[in-house]
Amino acid sequence: MNSKKDVAFSLEALKTGDRLEFARLVETYYEMIYRLAIKMLNNPQDAEDVLQETFLKALRGIQTFDGRSSLSTWLYRIATNEALMALRRQKPNIISTDEPLETEEGEQEPIQIVDWCCLPEPELMSAEAQRYLEQAVSRLSPNLRAVFVLRDIEGLSTQETGEVLNLSETAVKPRLSRARLRLREDLSGYFGEKLVEGKGVE
Amino acid sequence: MTSQKCRHLLGALSEYIDGTLEEQLCTQLERHLADCPDCRIVVDTLNMTVSLYKQSADLTSVPEEVRQRLFRCLNLEDLLGNPKTS
Image (cartoon, rainbow over all chains, first blue to last red; front, side, top):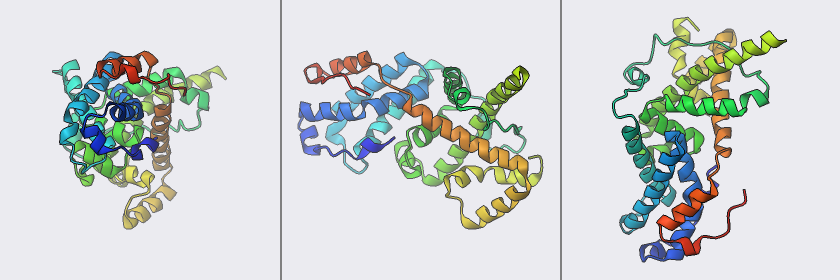
């Protein structure tokens, strides 16, 4: 998933405004930035705005890029911030339902015990299921969503995710855990129903 | 999954499926999993959840016109190569 992140670029060329080198940078990374944006925002127009704004900011800010992180991490950081700002514009007054989990370990959260792993692959990977997966992500709070998208969809390591979000690894792990458990609950509800429907047909 | 033990171990499952859980807790968890079918279901479905999202990343593609508009807004239109074949 992240095979492109080690592509070498001439920082000198980028900083002196070499258009060819910048075009190569865009060509290499636009897909991953768009994917991050669409998974964060679940809206193609907002995702395209984030994509464009990310590279416009990169173009203007490349002079100040200090090379302490990789270029891909730097681009992810710009894009994630843009996406978080876009989320605030999308739903300025809504507090996500998973926020209370941020404070405690969620001792009283219900836990669904349905083994839906046995569902056939076409059912798990259907277009409808894909839409449900996307909606489930958008029900996470922006902070949990960012960690989950970077770590599990973009395939960044815990350390890289921390670098993008300016968090320590020990802060990334519990957020990732909460995001995954919450999504598991959500998907268990959805696929659990599929399981019941499937049995009804037999 | 209703016991205190299950609740207590819930927070360790994410690191467990990544294979990064520290050894002592890992042993404790595996001992519990051997006797608790409910927790095994939670581990399996948690694994499946992460796996489905990983697969969903590969299904996301960028529409060609989005790529073209991006190059245009960066004044790189003349460097827009051939459409990607994926």
